[in-house]
Length: 286
Ligand code: NAI
Image (cartoon, rainbow, N blue to C red; front, side, top):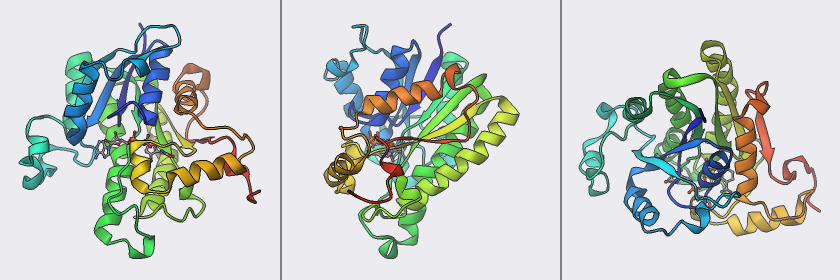
């Protein structure tokens, strides 16, 4: 039997989640995705109307099949956690069972188990504000959506993950070096995500034989990155200063993710793996 993957954080064909799904599909995995509730309608409509067909194409010529799209809001663990204004919001009203616990239950009911869990989501409502100007609410929201969301997903999916399986998330170097402009507590959220990768690797490894790693990715002009506002500058900076002077493609991150969740990486866990053309190794801009 092929492996089954749940990829959380896919809402278009531009981001790292989509590229990871494709790399896993190309390696023979069955793909389920979790899509943020407010983005669900447009994603499903675009998928159905063939808008993504070009980018669904795999190296062997076939099209990536997304077996099922689950609505997900990883900021909420159970229905009891959802405030009334969100529950009754018209962007949420059409969907159901989208808290983390419910999504894991739905996947269990539909498919029984998974082998691979991918976390490719982040949100920081105050990302454009410097840390000194970030509110407590904005900071905690960044941590909730970008760090605890992984703890929660892993916690709820672990019981249905087959031993030998693996999970992966996406982080950014702003956790360990100052990147002016990556604000709102997003740098803090990535630091938490990286530290949690280590601790969760220990806990999930001992308890369920599941590996946990994170990819520190270079800049990509995704929808989320464009919201931050300086992504073009970061891409240019990387091109000018990295050891490998080439554009970073989402597929390169997808391929590394496919390696890390495969048996080829069976002794790799708790690691931060850089997929950034080597930019992280530079000490001086050139
Ligand atoms: P993206 O826009 O493709 O992915 C982010 C996804 O998160 C979107 O689909 C969005 O709908 C979803 N999302 C936001 N809040 C959510 C919630 N509460 N529940 C469920 N889903 C939610 O953008 P990108 O850049 O591919 O982001 C994927 C990951 O890669 C993120 O963790 C990001 O921080 C990370 N990353 C991105 C870099 C870049 O330059 N684009 C660099 C390094 C890391």
